Image (cartoon, rainbow, N blue to C red; front, side, top):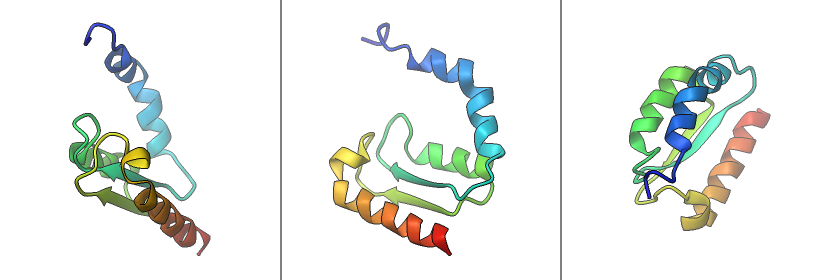
Length: 89
């Protein structure tokens, strides 16, 4: 299965562009993250903070994995509404 998944190669290839976009953003930016995600979990939140500097908000959903919008749709909805309210101020 791991040989079929090409995303790690893509992540390495596109990293400068993707990280650069986060570092240079000029709009309110936030993150909704599943803390139990083995690919982009808590360790990604730390790296995100480094790249973005001072994001408007970071919501880390406990006991949620790689697909928070599917695993906890109401929590994601509530977090997104919270972000929209904060961004409007």
